Structure formats: structure tokens, C-alpha cells
Image 1: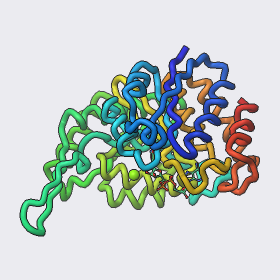
Image 2: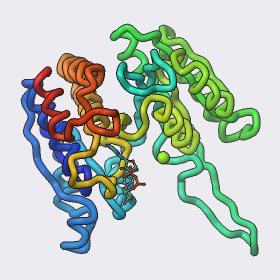
Image 3: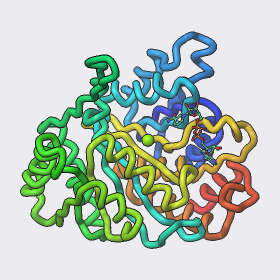
Amino acid sequence: MHKICVIEGDGIGKEVVPAAVEVLKATGVEFEFNHALAGDEVFEKTGVALPEETIAAAKAADAILFGAAGETAADVIVKLRKILDTYANIRPVKSYNGINCLKTGIDYIIVRENTEGLYKGIEAEIADGVTVATRVITKDASERIFKHAFEMAKDRKKQGTAGKVTCAHKANVLKITDGLFKKTFYEVSNDYKDIQTEDFYVDAMNMFIISRPETFDIVVTSNLFGDILSDGAVGMVGGLGMAPSGNVGDKYGLFEPIHGSAPDIAGKGLANPTATILTAVMMLRYLKENEAAEKVEKALEEVLSLGLTTPDLGGTLSTSEMGQEVAKRV
Ligand code: NAI
Ligand code: MG
């Protein structure tokens, strides 16, 4: 029995999350779903966007499934990631048949350090018209993100992937910070002799995720570089409606589609549930329910290839109808 904290949030979160929960129920895996509130709506009612009860519910769960927040996103999801110390941001990049991808045969995962780098939040105006931001790279945070990446590569190798970790950095220019990052990468790799390693400068990496994305398995990088690379990467495979993500730490796993509350289409049944269903697949793998994860992904692949989709992918189904087509096949 897995305890899942379900936070639908705002806008299309209220449509795509129920569709994914239907699919999870169809797997036959035993879940206890605890619904909790967060986002604009609860903020308008109570003045708090992320209530204490929600934080407690998230901490009490085995995993958290999050939809989207609206204008309060920074106070909800960014805060929740901090509170739960989910230091690894996991972004799968995969091309599915029937989806308008820029290339086929893409199946890799970007692992982004989620707590430091240039997003540490240390900025200042040091003189009139002169501003600085401090880029923090520590050995500890680098070590734990690399270990996480290598463990993922090990797990994936068992499912038949190449077993390779690619590190993206800019150690030629950022000699001290990314010097440490790169050095630590190869130190950690010593404990994973059966996993191949390679490293590239992030600018070249940006070209490779477009020119030869099919050659990657796990890509690991620092915070800002990961932010930029991963949006470009999912742009290759169908964009926002297709892109899941996970935030994982030593204690908690928080899973969310990368899109927001999409107020322009909310409440109309137009939202594509694929990103959230793929998010549920990631959550199943995190919970070691690999067989169920496989089943859901297969069912979704079939639905996509048959064109049984929402209008953004060219189909005529509503959010819940598409979810039902997947659930039925699971
Ligand atoms: P957005 O991701 O909500 O929407 C961008 C565009 O993509 C819209 O045209 C939308 O209709 C479309 N879209 C997004 N998801 C879709 C789906 N599943 N199916 C079909 N079309 C989809 O980003 P936007 O418009 O920049 O922000 C809207 C609100 O969402 C803002 O209040 C923002 O703060 C919040 N937001 C929350 C996030 C979170 O909770 N993690 C992340 C990004 C934005
Ligand atoms: Mg981003």
C-alpha cells in the first residue's frame, strides 16, 4: 500500500491530475490517495498558498503527485521543493510514436542539481550600475547529484539501456566552480566501473541534444545549465503537454508535469493529460512498481499512436476521455 499525497492545485491541475489518478487506480497497485490543497484558490480563501496541513500531508506520504499552481507557483511548488530538500530534478526526454517530434529514437533523462549553482539566490548591486550573482558549487551537493545520476544509470542499464552518464559543464571558463564539478564527477564515477562516462562543455551539449539526442542515457548538470538544456530537450519531443518531471531527495519524491495551470484552456477539457500520466509513471518507478509503470507507459504509447488524444495533439478527445482510453488499456 502506497500513500500518495495528491495536490491538484489550480486551473488544468484539476483536470489532468484526476485523469492520471484514474490511470493509477487501473494498475491494480494498492494506493491510498490523500488530497491536499495548495495554490491560488486556497490563497484567495485563506491568505495562505501552501497550508501547513498540506506540508504535513506531503511529509506523511510515500510520494506526492502535484498538478499546477497559478500565480502562487513560487510560494507553492518552489517552496515545497525546498522544504522537502528534493535536490535532484529529473526530466525524462523521450520521443513517442504519433507525436510530432523533431527526431525519433530519443530516450534519455536529464538530472539537474536543484539547490545551488547560479540559482542559489545570492545577488547584489555592489556599486551604482554594477550587479553580481554568486555561483555556488559545493563538493557535497555535487557528489550527491552525481551519485543519484549513476544510481539511475545503473537501474536503467538493468532495463537494457547503454548505461552511460554524460556530464555537462563549462570547466574551461569556470575553472574553479566547474573545475570542482567535473573533478567530482570523475571521482564519483570510480564507484561505478560498469557505467560509461563522458563530459562535454554545456554549449556543445546544447548542440548535441539537438543533433544526436539518441546517443544519451543520463545527462547530469548544474542548476542553470539544467534549466536551459531541459526546456530545449523537451521542445524536441512535443513540448509542454508531453513533459513530466520529478523532484527527488533522500526522503521525499515530488512528481509534477512541467506545465503550469494554463488559464487559457482551463475548465474546458482541452488539457493534454499525457505529461501528468507520464509523471505518474515516474512516480510508479520511484515506488519500485516497475511492472505497473511499464503497463501504463505501453497503454499510453498505444493511445498516442492511435491518435486518441486531446486537440493539441490533433485528436478530438477531452482530458478525461483520453485518460479513460489509457486506463482502459492498463
Ligand atoms: P503554462 O504551462 O500554464 O501554459 C503555457 C501554454 O501551454 C498555454 O498556452 C497553455 O494552454 C499550454 N499548455 C500547458 N499545458 C498544457 C497541456 N497539458 N495541454 C495543452 N496545452 C497546455 O504556462 P504559463 O501560461 O506561462 O503560466 C500560467 C500560470 O501557470 C501562471 O500563473 C504561472 O505562474 C503558472 N505556472 C505554474 C507552474 C507550476 O505550478 N509548476 C509552472 C509554470 C507556470
Ligand atoms: Mg525552467
